[in-house]
Image (cartoon, one colour):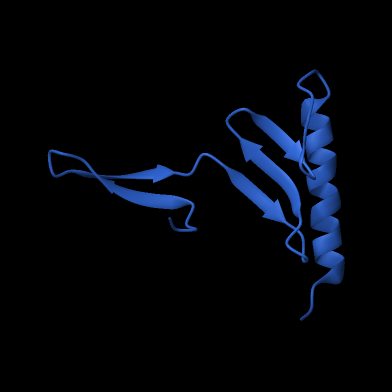
Length: 76
C-alpha cells in the first residue's frame, strides 16, 4: 500500500484511470490525528462529529484552529 492520494489503476481492457483515496487525514507535528475526512463522516481528534446543522461549522473551526497553529509554529 502506498501513501499517495491519487493512484493510477489499470482495467481489464488495457485502459488506465486515476482514482482518489477515500480518506484524507491532517496530522499535527507529533503525528496526532487532528482532522479525518472519510465517506462516513468527519472526525476531529479521533472523535466522529455528530451530523447536524452545526457539522460544517465544527469542522471548519477545527481546521482553522489547526491551520493557525501550523502557521504560528512553522520553522523557516
